[in-house]
Length: 584
Image: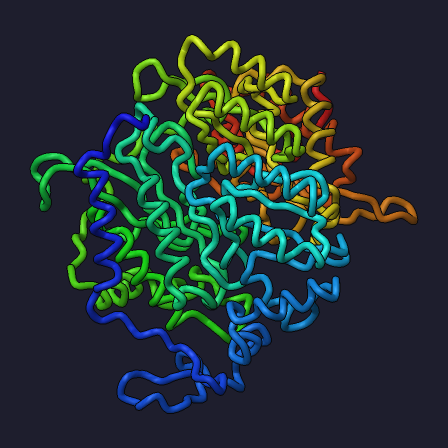
């Protein structure tokens, strides 16, 4: 949407939902703390101290829950200032609590902090990009990473600079509050919201409202584990919303149904692809202005009932595994002053198939004469001079707006058709391409052991090397997604890649070398599939020719119009292993 347009009535309704969320009947009050550090009870207890946390006896709490019980992470700012003054990294409980400010002690991979900020829906302004460039240059490692939650991370921040970084974030209009530990992570949304000719609803206002509701609701910090929310407006580009704990999908309902015709939202629950599960539709239909209230109620149900004794069972998936999704929906409904409409998904006009790699290249917007340019950022890494260059292009040829995507790249929207060629040329001078390369355009990688203590390989460097190799060896004619992740946490979501890899150490002779276990056939949205493991513990030197051979065999043996997901899903693991035979 350009600056001369106003929101439609439908798009303004999110405001009503925002304020309605604060006034819902039946919300459980925040169990805060008294001055002595003990938890308050409910209204009938007279504020007496209790020995449970949401019903879990204190002695049964896991280590991290005890840390939170002893001291709220949001009350650790003075501790952070002390560590900064001493130029010292936090340890133990403090290392956990300071994550509430988006700062992570990533030792021993790097004896430094990593900063993760919050950028609602991935939308930021050119001056903010300039500010991030200054932070990367002055106080971090001289680079920044675009993440798979349409966000930025800075690395190699020394403790003495931690408070400076947090202050600078606020100065440029961003924050990292609650970006780590047991909190609601960055809210994602359709990257083309408000400018997509195919969209059903502009979800960006919802993402922003949810972002601010979280920031201003202390109760939403200190969940049993981390929690992800996404809003999908039904446009051409996937936001990978079905990988989130809660996914709101815009739909249309026609004549002859139990509700008035119009735009509504479906709710999907418990996506966690690192555990091989997509979010599933829970059978309810809600209005746009109800989304925030529903999200708040669902978060509260999770806060009150999630497992606080076993970290491995503390995600929403496990609560719903125990209860079933309908009990979860019923408990949510008890916290609302409206009833859910139950409706089968087949009675809704669901979103069209997404367009692969639509996050790259030039695409017309819904506003006549305007376009967005998708810029390919190799494995999400940007240098300060590149960040400033992108900010300059966004100001000169757009409105100064920049949109990060879950595909580790960015969009520059609102570019006039007559400026496209010049803008692309300047982007190339910055060091980036805009072409929707079928191999490089879908290459995703997590930080790897360069900056993460859990990873066993340098995934970003390996991904660049693999991409260059495949470009020389394979003439791919359809977009393919390759995801490389460093450990079982699956930050690069390897199970949803056409080709996914999780790094492992492989014994070769007397030496441990970097290697990968390889999964095939993953996808999201209309191609939704969890990839299946086909090859285990392959040295990286062997990964490159193996992947090239598989891709060549696909090109040679596929049926007309058959996608890689379809090709692999129709074959057994044994048949897929045979694809590694040398193709002649």
